[in-house]
Image 1 (cartoon, one colour):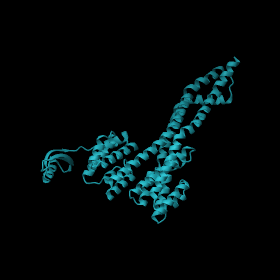
Image 2: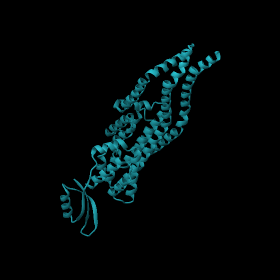
Image 3: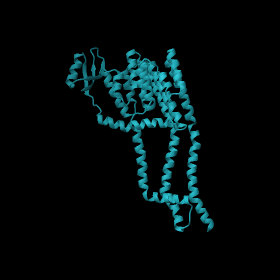
Image 4: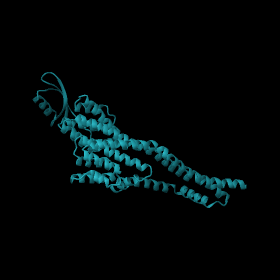
Length: 402
């Protein structure tokens, strides 16, 4: 069991900390054997694993919160604050309950003798392999402060890239979702009432109006079936996209979407170059760095190519030769990486690539709403025109005859 203690040393100084023991008496005996006079010993209450899982599901941990954690740790360690005290200070001001629980668990593990990287590796749902490897490299080289600063900068850049792509896709996604919802409501509620006018008068209507009337009749009777079908398609697609085959197919499809596809490509390339530069600068061997990056890029398409590059380097080849044969890596990327390999400045070259594609992502995401707005307006205009032409025009002709 783990106990929290307060005790006085032989010099009269107040000490506090954590100690492992079978029971409270054994903890007191251990402290006395070390020359301390126990003042208070309390058993720590660990958060149940089930409660941790519920906290994770309820709150989760965003990339921004991980970014803030590393930045605060970097700031405190640069100020020469010990790691344990730094983590305690960060935990005290962390609002996310689940992340705070994880940090306190790490504090306990470090106090028990674990390294920071070992404590982080116990929480793979929070810390990526890249972060764990960077911390481990810093511990081995004796430059942990530099590694944490690297991670803080890297986490912030990854968060910025992710935020840009989410922000760029929010507007068109919202408009299309609203159009689907409004179309469903109009078909179920409004359309049957309008078409009832033609049925009551028994007038002849054009074929396109008849089709719309049939749609309205069907939706008014079986709207619940259509709703279940739509929800089934949405959730079924989401479930399939989370599977290995579905994710692989979606990763290729989304890069072929006009306009938006370039955003995904540039984000993946910037993330690849930035993270690989960070790992290589931190002293991680290139093969291991490539394996780690393959899981960080968050694209199965790029993951398979990067893993092939790792195998090629392991055999004595170069990663630029693999990238040159892949259609998802632009020729300029493979050529610049080859220059970096030949000159021994691969990290510097990768940083330039990351900056270039970061700027390209900025440019596209800033103009994406402007580029998509005419397309969305045209799409919505066609829908409104169909309704006007099929419903209001026959009503206007009918009123003219009367």
